[in-house]
Image (cartoon, rainbow, N blue to C red):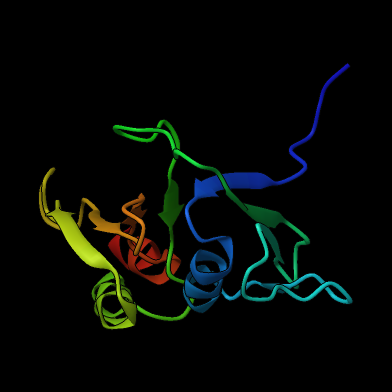
Length: 132
């Protein structure tokens, strides 16, 4: 027997604010018929194409130190550089720029969301295909 992932959960201080911020990053929406509202302690988002869900849940003391899980984002319709600029303008902060770390055309950029969660921006599928 196996299990499937029901959803990805992110502990946070403000579930509504963080879910709204991530909506603008990954293009997920509120669950149909169950909109997220300010003050909600749990806010679920869903990918309108795949159905994958992300739950933002308020906890009194989010896990201190480095998180053990983070998102690696692959841009769908922009280049890596364009997506990094879009996310910085959206309110992310730069943590580490490792583009070219393993040679030309390699690497990633690590950003931080408004609550301090790290996430990485990889090269787009188009950039990978052009390299090959």
